[in-house]
Image (cartoon, rainbow, N blue to C red; front, side):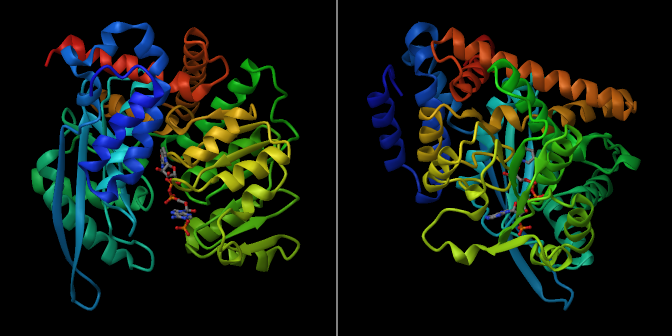
Length: 460
Ligand code: NDP
């Protein structure tokens, strides 16, 4: 890509790339387009990044180092062979070993993993830790599978993946559909194959090498980031404010928990089938029981709390989501990519929402981002706001390497400091490049600079 110095040129170059790639890369192009358009102020002011003919920095950054694809065959409980696809996208290791989660979900394909891996490069750079970017996973659906089936799938997946990972090479973690249970099975198989007990995965259960605070880290981190952003932007704090949250998985549960710690009132949660609105505040004990212990639909929540409202997804055939219709001070999309659309953004604006912080990766569509920025909603992009998870994964790697265990309080202090530091860096970078208050621009430029500088220093 040559001399991209304005939006029209950037869009033309991306269109060219699109024509040469497959359709499933759509979300990857969306992520790439956002980054390339928002780093234009840097490319225009600092010619070492702009003159790509010499360093080809952008071309090198948007091309993964390698994409590993493999077959995963496993036996279900009826002894019938099942076949899934497995992937690892090792995107960029300029700053350190590849690092990024594994996603098990039927929607997983190469394009989704390229988008997630690309975002991960800049996110990991923002943490200031020595880690590169990667992502992996499978189209395997853990829903409805027995523990034994999950174990057999994870073992089979690891039989192939182990060839490409290692504590100094690539350290995967969890993501959608991959929590402590799956990481445990994956780690167990890696250990059997290699006869080594080493920090090759993060998000491990605590009693065999996991870090305290890892389960909470992403959700807590989003709220620490938001608190700092509101302070920097001169807005009121979260105390006593109504907040909406989407998702009811790892990130959402802990975002709700931290909001409650800070005296805010989170009133919603969602899953892939519907939305709960509980005006008195979400009953987190019940929610955890339903989602972590019984793994059932949110419809069950309304059976225990009939005063809450359950809205199934099917009520919105035209697009838009019930959760973003609820008036709130701050909104936290914590489920999945592109779950907050232009229709939703308009509703948030209309209802006076002041801040949106992305717990999920790229939960807002391009159009939704444009609307929110135009209407001066403080928007914390996922690659900055949800970096707490990978930061504590980085701390898990340090603890494993040093054979140490840090306390919950120590880790929480480090997480807070990391999120506040990222927020300040993002905010000051945005100011420096003439986009004060635009955290999307700030995050993309700050992350890009760190990676690009390392790539140039390391040579071609
Ligand atoms: P979980 O699997 O724990 O939870 C995902 C939640 O999102 C569930 O409530 C799930 O509903 C819902 N969901 C998933 N896919 C869809 C969909 N297509 N439509 C509607 N709802 C959906 O995942 P996490 O909480 O770990 O991850 C959530 C987001 O946060 C993802 O974007 C992930 O990449 C990102 N993230 C996660 C980190 C982590 O540490 N876990 C770190 C940084 C980012 P249901 O149960 O019905 O499927």
